[in-house]
Image (cartoon, rainbow, N blue to C red; front, side, top):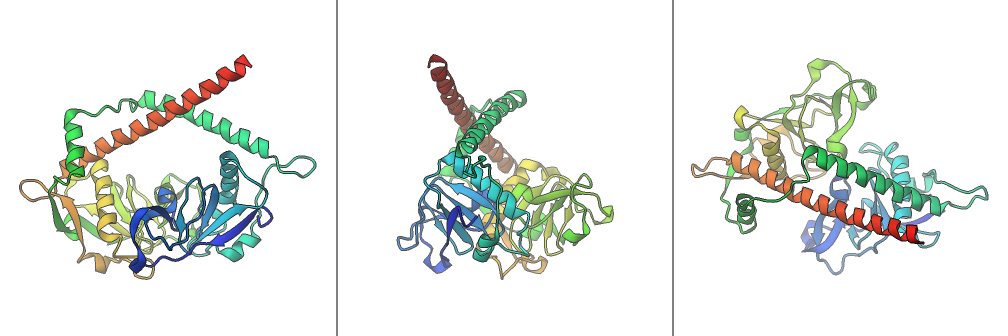
Amino acid sequence: MKSLFANERGVRLTKANRIIGTRPLVTAGYENTGVAEYIGNLKQKTFPKNVITIDMFGNTFYRDYEFSADDNILVLTSLIGKLSKEMQLYFSSSINKAVTEKYSYGKQFRQGSFNETFIKIPIYSDGSVAFDYMETYIKELEAERIKELEAYLIATGLDDYVLSDEEEKLINNFKSDNVKWGEFNITDIFTVTNTHTILKNDIIPNSGDFPYITAGEGDNAVLTYISYDQNKLEKGNSIMIGGKTMVITYQPSKYFSNDSHNLSLVMKKNTNRDKLTQLFLVTALKTSLGSKYEWGNSISNKKIQSDIVMLPINSDRLPDYQLMNEYIKVLQKIIIKAVVEWKDQKIKATRKVVSKNNVD
């Protein structure tokens, strides 16, 4: 890989030097492609767009925007000339496949790892890189996925994204801070227990139907699906907190956990234990606890006993679970609207290209 890209390490940004702004700060993680927050520090190094980043766990992403990065990130710039977006996407996918199989929390990807990493890419018989193949492959893959997305949205009815007057009002209430909030002890909302420990070395990947959950962020923390001792299954329709990483996920079904430092949070009131409400609670927990715990100061069952979470309240000053549920429903519609509009733009652009080619 060192013959294809130069690499540069990001720069650590301390909490004391954080200034809120508009520039993405890339940190280690899969969720939101590693963008943890947006900063405005003028002295913090800014990396150019059209580059690739790799974090210490091997998560690899193409960046088509300027950004800053912390010291757990390697920024890769091309040594083989200017690369198109499609080429960069092909390279980032190849790199991600090569490194995520080898690196994780226990064995982290660093600058020394970069020099030892080899990736597979298409070449011609003369040994030159098949750039045109990469570009065509990514474009065809994108067109195929857009077609599948269009069919899925129609089949599921998700192409209906128009907000009602009540839904518009609900969103505006959140935006204008007209929602009343209250503080609640987390242990008043949830029953908190430590999960079991099932080591990665003791499982057989893809051996069963139950999710094997880790503290990682990708794929809702699901590493694989396994068969194992069912006495060690954790309750589904619950929330899991990665004890060492603070990755918080909603787990819809029973699952196995990789570490007893992880916490299982089961809502005490069965009547409110639905998926959408718990998705709201996941975000509320991240917001309430995210700045308190970090690597080196991890959460625990003992610590969470005194923690609080901020939640919307009703007229009785109790958690307004119905409002939480409705808010997530509206957010789903808004997100689907953006997806549908993006899909329609892509299809329109594709049709123009096809029409032009037919004329030519």
